[in-house]
Image (cartoon, rainbow, N blue to C red; front, side, top):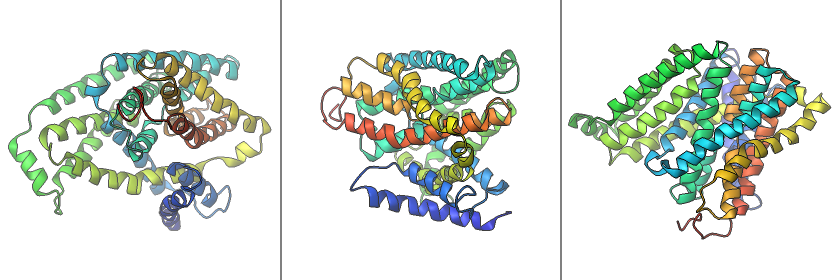
Length: 396
């Protein structure tokens, strides 16, 4: 480790963040991730210069992003989101992508690949960030939480697939073949997961749940590692593997360890939200190019523009295609939650900058707008849903 003190500072920021949320809770509800990112900016090289990421920290941050997407995949109840709700979600995202690419072409002056980067970033939903907010408010298992899960899942999965097809550096046809091959292998894994597990599997999982063996937790980590490795072998974004691993894990645990699945998930969440996920967000702040944003008035002006485009490109189609049983306030809240983004914006803009398809100033503006979306849009969505009741309220 090149900078051994950096990890200490990152974890100190991770501990300080919930304290700040608690302190601000009486005045305004600020999402935890906002404090984590801002603290990362403060301790990073752009402000105080105390923390400097290295290879070890970057690897842990990548694992944190994978864990975030994994937990988002686990939270989705496909039995609840199928049918008309899922069909509407599947229609909304391609419309957003077409709008996003059209906007990207305007910004890039006709540069197709830059338009793909900008357009794909504008269509993402931070499902891994939104679902914990709904869970903390007790709304995840209701009708509204189910609809958010459906639209958020497509908004998480769609950009990952589009990135694999359009921004992988290969020809789209070659990427499509690899993506189909990955899909076939994943479908085979789902078929395997649906088969009954032998009795000893559940017995061993429950017997070691509170011992040093932790068989079930280790098995979950094995599934995650296998799906990440499979995505890497096919040359696809590892986030695709993380999402698939979350879906597979839910199927396996609910069939093999129905009584202890919540306890196993609790242990995995403790590992994720207690260490890896906050590390990812703090490192995002540390690596944020604040100078590129502040030194360019044009880039700074793009931040509110991109924030508005997140709502227009992603939120408007969601609002129009939202299930008809949701009242108007809930449709607006759904659109705002769907427009909340960050992790995939960071990943997509990083790919764009690395492949020299996107300038650092525009990338910083996109990430800056995504950070503000995490702070502002869920707060606005919560205000829209303040009066409970109706088909989309908590009572449903």
